[in-house]
Length: 411
Image (cartoon, rainbow, N blue to C red):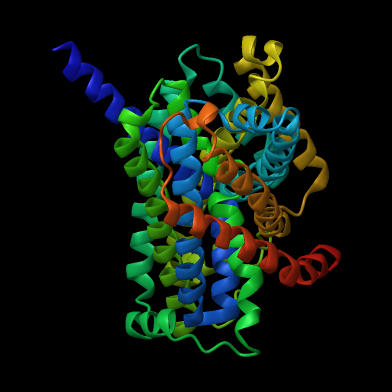
């Protein structure tokens, strides 16, 4: 009986970890990026999603298997690999997580604005306060598991409804997914691919679910199958959502309007415009629900994972983990209230997290060959080879896409 209960609890944690990773990825930036790039590339956007998905699966499998088998968090693995490296990795991850979290607060505020006409300036503080409330409870981690699962399913259902409303040309989208025809050549896909990769498995995101498993004591070679399944579930949930959202926006562009110009009376946000044109005022309110929920769950995921990267390096953080998470969310809220322009920030932070990816993945690849980290576990050679290829590709894409990112930042 105890064994069955333990298996049931373990199964919930595994699914919760997958949803934590996926919902951390399915944030406001995810919605905004998908709308922007669908408007720019139309049916060819399917190809961008496909390539970023393949790269994301390779990253996820490498990272989760090494962390899962070792039972160590990313920063501790890096420190064992090379003393001091863990502090550098933790700094990069926490910095990327902070940038993402600031954008997430802004995204949640945009959602409240679309849902109930709440001014974005007030929405920042309402969103931050609601995220803080969760971490005031002693059993915050189990609450997080339940919240992200329920809200994640809600987001997928709402976007599905909008997709059926817009009725996109599915055949055209499928054809161009495998046979793209980009105006200006294939290299115009570099920036969106890097942005998606950074937003799906870059920075803190790919570590969010893996660290949740370590916190729950689910680790070791004997749990490898379950850990691998959970990691693939996380990427798959995010990918399904990306495809549904792409199709919903694509339907709007084909059947209603090719331009996602701002709606009068609302802050500029391409995703909100797509939902509005797809289903009128109801669509706009639907967008509000999706954006707010996505923002809130991503704030939770970003704050939780960023703090897990520093808590084993500094004992005071481990002792007062929830307090530091609350401080992280509060600081993000304050910064967002001064920065403004959440929609632009949401596109850029995905790319910035993509720049961190080659560093963290390289650390994991080297760690996979160290017996003092993974024991007698043999990391598959094909995963290492593909992982090295992803590092090379992401470095190349980063260099190629950097001028675009800089232009967007300055523009």
